[in-house]
Length: 86
Image 1 (cartoon, one colour):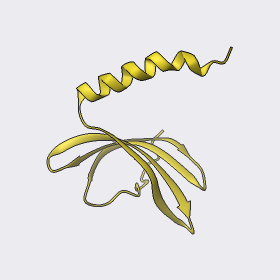
Image 2: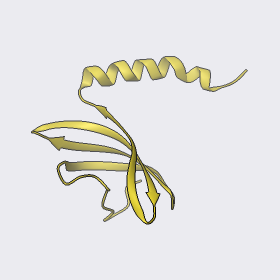
Image 3: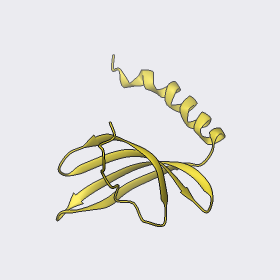
């Protein structure tokens, strides 16, 4: 899903390690990004909105460690069956 050569609209403060684009249109861009700051790596779930030709961050959610990921994963797995309406 990663487009070759695409530059993410993320501050140069962060070192981007890798990313996967989930969705991209003319107006919206959603990606999962592994980035590093202060020597620590995190995973960020980003949503950008294209306004007047410039990508602006709308939402950012970080996963800072494996314990946090496991808690999120368990909660999501618990709730996903409710996506199907009866």
